[in-house]
Amino acid sequence: MQLYATATNCQVGRPDWIYLSPHLDDAVFSCGGQIALQARAGMVVWAVTVCAGSPEGPLSDFAQWLHAYWGLAETDAPAARREEDRAALALLGAVAVHWDFRDCIYRRAPDGRALYADWGGLWGPRAEEDGEMLAELTRRIVELPSSATLCVPLGAGRHVDHRLVREAAEQTGRPLVYYEDYPYAGEAGEVEEALGEGDWKPGVVALDEAALEAKIAAALCYRSQITSFWADEADLAAHFRAYAEGVGGGSPAERYWRRIRS
Ligand SMILES: [Zn+2]
Image (cartoon, rainbow, N blue to C red):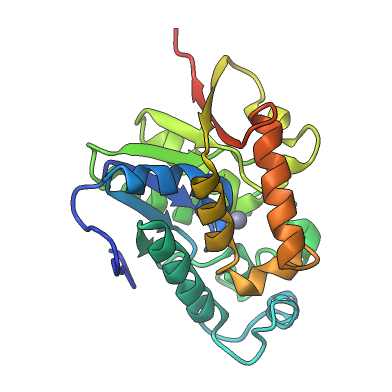
């Protein structure tokens, strides 16, 4: 069930909080500050990455292009990214759990056609063939320890894997806390669009300097992903700090959302 699970340098046991991460970086990029605070307080925290599996068969042109862009052209990119994730979560004191679903760039239809063959596909409608993954993912989320608070992506930025993880989590009927998918959430209007209709209550979690610095240091462990979003390490750190200060009204914070049920 939990391929590649590791728990080095941190406490294993019944989790108090579980973060669902579509990809190998989302939980840390979005929630690394709160994870640091919780681990420091002695809580058991799991970051479960859904799409952590290695591809099977030949890569699509798009996947090959992305691998090259990440500087991982000659390697099993997800294996390298799992290493980055283990390092990041060990630094925060949390448990890395890696599930074996594949990133949308690797998923294929039964006839071999790539389901998401280009950049635009990542933000478009979900392929019909992903219905099976949605059902299986929902089953796996149901089996996660029910004592833990489950924290899931809002889907800001509309990445198809982020929306799929949110939908699967919602289908379980469990109470959820939603996080703002960073860096997508930094774009104007993306969080509002992801919230959509309905009543929501924000909760702002203040980060002390140590928690913010731990988050940035953990984010820098995802070396293959830095140039996807930022010019260099200093640029990443500056953007993380600016976003945290933005949601905290001048002092660093992360913002989470809950639905208000009537
Ligand atoms: Zn992602």
